[in-house]
Length: 325
Image 1 (tube, helix red, strand yellow):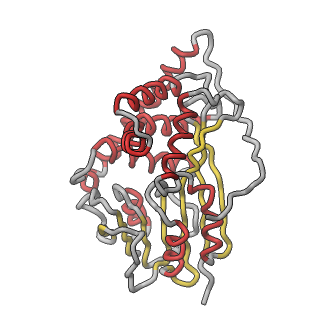
Image 2: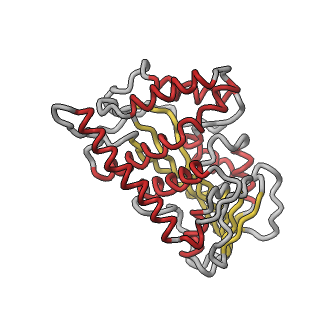
Image 3: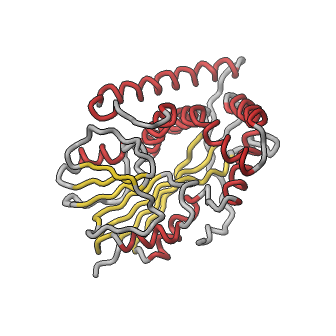
């Protein structure tokens, strides 16, 4: 594993909103307003693109909704972009690793109508009706790749807790990218922190995060790949590797309007997926009962709704170019 920067980072100063004499009530109202609007946004998006998003087969609808929320959350965080690497305007072949619901591949197919977009995933939950230049396949990216033609751009997003051998994945990306092409990784560091010390070690949210990271690593999976993306890419041979980090607040507590919106989307995806993140890992690896996990989730939900707890974690983006031959 490539080492993360060993320097101690100081969290940026992020000013929190003030909620008056009844902060819990005011915060609840703000969160409710945001989440109702955002949930409607996702639903309307699906209806607007009905020919593409109406047919998820063999899928947990709540989880597919959360995956689409994550797509929107990432887009908002990146200032309206769905990637940062400079995809060539004349790109012919683009690969989306772990495509999920296919939403990124479909949007990219619309943006690059002359390119062939391939999305792969181990779960066949993608819609049947897609742009003519987009196709999906069931594949395990940790197996040996058998593509015969290289790609101009490879995109890999939110594959933490899915990949066991990140260096090998980077090497396969390098091997299957054309000289001069680009590869981009977007993933998280799930270490919960706060800019003002309001997230304490005694909080259920902090304890959950620590246990989640520990259990994942004991299972042989790196839950915080964002920390290592840049190093892995450089080790694989990519040049001009750029790395950026973005704050993901948990909730609408920041005063900054942009971070407040990011936090609202993040709050929504956590509330949608908390049990899904937790049940299998905590019951199998930590030996907890379902009832114990439910208590943990209930405590986390309560804390997240507290405007005095200014929790956040980070999104990392790294992208680089394969040297010209």
